[in-house]
Image (tube, rainbow, N blue to C red; front, side, top):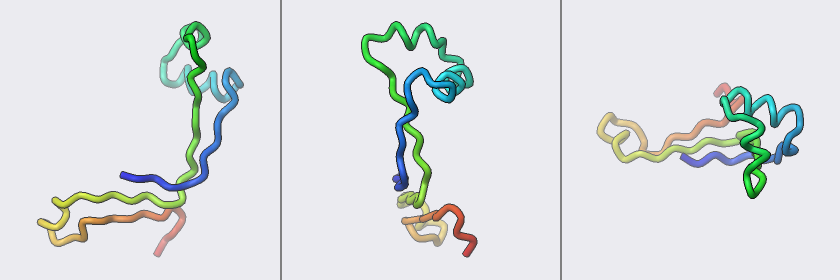
Length: 72
């Protein structure tokens, strides 16, 4: 799977960063104790592509593509 889009780094230890750590049950203190900062990157997808040769067995193209927001 390949996701193409716009990426942004969430500021370490910002409110959003801490909320995501808590959501994933990662203790913030443990993150602060790491020798290097663990970066959180948000990707807003513009295109998602998936390739799987097994799709051909079912009569589908081996390459599938989703464009978020495209209702066509």
